[in-house]
Image (cartoon, rainbow, N blue to C red; front, side, top):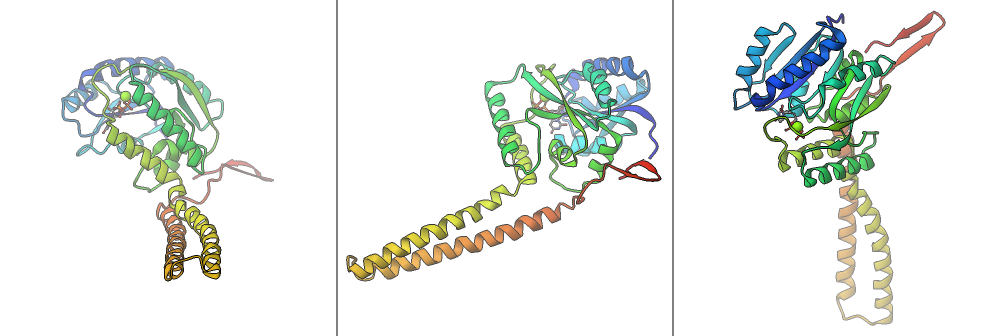
Length: 319
Ligand code: UDP
Ligand code: MG
């Protein structure tokens, strides 16, 4: 696909009317300092209830570099970013929050790193200003649990603030899964990825839209989308159950032989041990099949070829 711009910027916006002007001023200044007018800023209004759309569409009318997109209702942060990514026309694509928590001025550093030959430069939070100790602690716990349970290397303390190559975004857009956890999907895609440490600022205006419920939902999308470990719990329990069952069986038989039990206890105990172990084993079998069906249902590509070299000369893989 031929691209039109050196840079596309995607900014999801939900009830950001108050801070949007300041965001656009800083973002456009930072972008034009690096690529001149050769960029587009795609702002996605995720069904805001305030004046976000009015402010945004006015900015799009007065700035040639701004594209305003309005979703039909609130779809959530990850889908707002997904919608923006499906429209980009640039060579390099940056995703940034519109609340100025991610500094737009990092765009130059990110482009310099990407152009060293990386596919992804993700911003990793060194410090987070203006966020409650509860948010910081739960976020930290979440990233670490995910890194441990996930079968892929999902970087810790990293949100969606990042710069990506066109190739990675094309591949990301081709992943059809519905529960989208973008930072995990990008990690899954592989290629050459690197981090850029930064300090996360406090919100410029407004309040966070990530309530506890949304944070739990995002955490579930991350954990369930990138790991079948929760399903495998049944398998672990079945293994423990079988060992415990054998031990109990020996105990019951010993009691029966020495006659140290009341009549009826041994048969009852045997029934309980047998059926509970059988249930655990069946559950674990279901879990294994379900895990595979679930991964298959995601319809992800099986692998990604980065490059192919042969005698007739090297070629960049197309996806
Ligand atoms: N956002 C969105 N849709 C939503 C919630 C948030 O597009 O349903 C946007 C929001 O406007 C911001 C970004 O996603 O630009 C991150 O959201 P927020 O700042 O509320 O999250 P936090 O930074 O507190 O994790
Ligand atoms: Mg924020």
